Image (cartoon, rainbow, N blue to C red; front, side):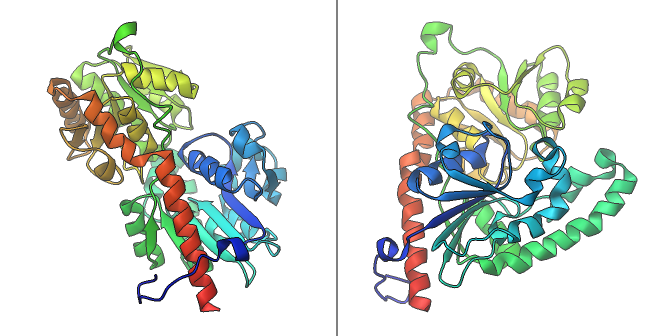
Length: 388
């Protein structure tokens, strides 16, 4: 039934004949791509549309789909420098021809949610976040200290126009699905739209404590698993570990790597990208996993907890929903390196139960995502049918 008490029939099998999945870009297997992988599993016959694709950069489950790319794909160096083509994304995503599809699922943190659908189609957007750089994180990405004063001044009006376009195209979505209560609030603030919350899928069967004690046990090393981009605030993790005199391992790559290496001392080890199995082993051995930035949801802290490992995170964003203070980790009130260093010392003193930490992570299992997302799609289709 809907909010007014009217019974909503299950219309999906009758209505949906062709499905399109739209994802911003396929350039690596990060959190958004893990959500996309689960959606692709639910809709194996769907056609996948994306602005830019690097062949082989995502999982075989995603690659098995028929994939259509935008005109951006053919621009020089698009696979490596696609972010430089950001002003072209609105026109590129609007050029996708989706007229033959009855159901459109966009997996969006940038432009994918702005695709144009036919009048008969239902469009559900799984929103990882409204555009961070166009709304509230412009200085972190395009501040004068990062891109230079001239580029900063030139980019500000470009991002302002992009934000206006982002808000204006929110009406193209029939139903927003947010990946956290935090993102639901951002959707309400920037798009003036309500959303259903469906937490991302964490493979809690794959991420598990394993036989850590039998292979040397945990060590004193802290761990960061992250793309090396500004809003992740990896510099804070580096400085906090220096102040706490604790070693740090960093898994990930990104445009901030060279600058972060300049900040790092001898006790910081950059590991680059690692396989999921290697990351699972690193989770299992770490004293704690660090999350110094504001995450929209944050799959890494849940994966770490599934391995029985505590998390030290900023008390903001999705971490407030996934980390239980002094039960599965420590939530740090402020964002300074000094406050994070205190958080590291605090988590080291706590006697946390790995089994309880894992139990908390199991609330975000892949199976739960599959069930909840299918329910959200079915409801959106039924409500769209009643509007006709």
